[in-house]
Length: 164
Image 1 (cartoon, helix red, strand yellow):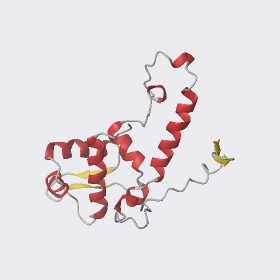
Image 2 (image 1 turned 120 degrees about the vertical axis):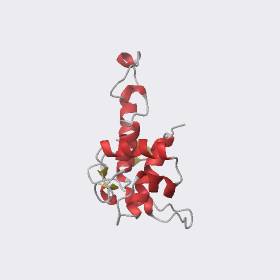
Image 3 (image 1 turned 180 degrees about the vertical axis):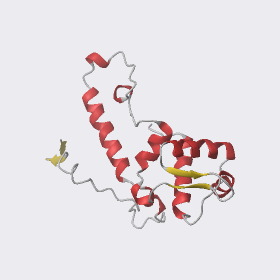
Image 4 (image 1 turned 30 degrees about the vertical axis):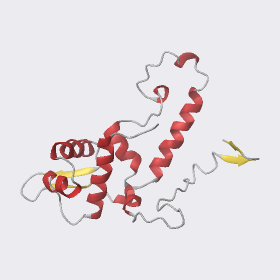
């Protein structure tokens, strides 16, 4: 099972809260209360998001945190990468690979393609998409995935098989 860590989930919750409440800077205490996550955890997540340039941080009585750019310009892949590090589904697609099988692995290229597809899918989902009311009508999700123009020609379906 593929699963994000709790810190990443909390990061997306915090970023979504900040995207919905853009009129003020928010300090760690008010954010922790607003999203009901313990203050030390909120501080840790805010630090990671700030270090990766997703949040602006201002000190002082009127300081706090705010998004560094519009929610429609921040991808979920960026948030995940800020907290988890580079997205890598298997050891062999990681930058810091330590797999002993790598030199003679016959599936490494396919894992790289799969990892790329997952990354691009997450990159297409923007923080603003996470703000859409979670109502499902006839089983349709509020998040729509549309391959970017540069990616649309990479994968084709022919006779029930996927090629590309």
